[in-house]
Image (cartoon, rainbow, N blue to C red; front, top):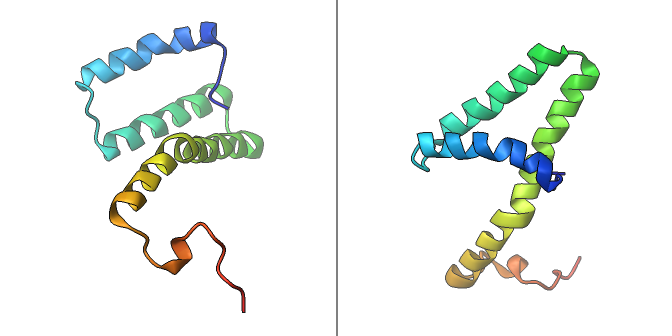
Length: 99
């Protein structure tokens, strides 16, 4: 869950702001991948690697993906669907009739 307490967010906000300014607000997909991978590596280097830690890190990455989709991308997809139309009848909000 990324909704951490505001005092804890403040600890990280300067780092995020610095990184964003360094890249003038533009970062490639490869650079973002590198950054996230490097953060995961740093955690492993400091805390060690075992099944539990690997599972924890993979779970965090999955939750990041899901939360980004839930809060940002899903809304974007809805706007595009309204602008460009459904792909097929299956895209309608009503469930298709089952055979």
